[in-house]
Length: 459
Image 1: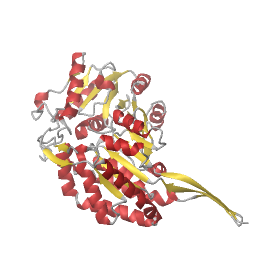
Image 2: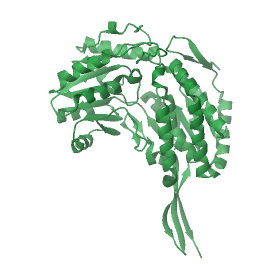
Image 3: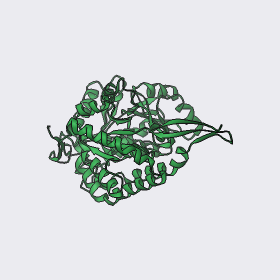
Image 4: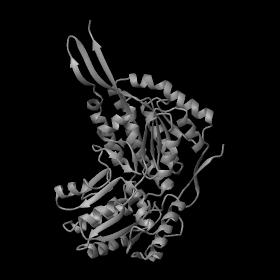
């Protein structure tokens, strides 16, 4: 089979190359996962938690290696230290709540009856993970799936294929059996074949809308449950009573961190007319303070996009918007590392509207459009004018106002005075073309288990 190449955005070199499994080898891997599942589920919950946490601890031991590899694979500056804070926090939280969430719900426990609802592992969980936060997005499903008693097959994005290898290396070193957690390299055809032929009991996919549609087509008629997170066009709304400096700092970081390659990154900002001019001025200054450069340079706060073809999409959106009347406020000359390829200067656009792709289609890059609004009604209408619904960020001083506005926004998470953040105690979910299902929180365990009722009678 044709090898899959990982082209590094740092210098355009082939950083890694792997040959995907043949269909027969892939089927054998799925069968091994199925065969190993009952024994894994028969272990105590405490034992499974212990092994999962030990696997994450082993991953932490690889930190220096992991951070360097991440920079080579997808361009994030090494100064940010990888994704270990979120990986550890999510693992710890899901481990802490597992016993309570997985405990049976007892309806009756008497001399005549025992009636209760238990949670049972689904079987084999298939994770198809993305490259932008390659460890975090995997951990979101991997940890609860294993703790709940499922076996896991992981297929990572080709752009970050070494991430799957590191995770498997860490978990196997900690004592998780090799067939319980397998990392595989698959092409699209084999992936679709495995799903269509019911080799998995749950499929979790994070990626594009087109990728999610391919997953649904592959699973059609199989009744295999799917968890799909398919991106977003997340808005920020700055009300007249907002803390301006805090809003600029958080929203611009949410828009441009990781070169804008965040699932819940801020891609459009609506600012009340009374604060608009000041917000724009501060946003431009904030952006111009960034340094685009090689991710191994300690001074770089912005690295290359993960692939030059991703950068091309953003460049095209910016050019189209400018041709349609948008005004760019950032001079690319301020960012000499912009090479026309993967290294892309950030951009702030004003005079934008919803006829422009940059305000309607996912950019997933270092660009943000800012629009002036007259108040809540206009902001709500514009925030909802999107095919996506992942998060929305509202900047105000009042809880009740934020909640009332949030109730009118079609989205999965409402933030007040923060953005681009995952709280493991809250469900990570979306609506509209952002997808279906939910991970993290107690609901994350419900996604990878099924209810099983026990009605036991003495005679």
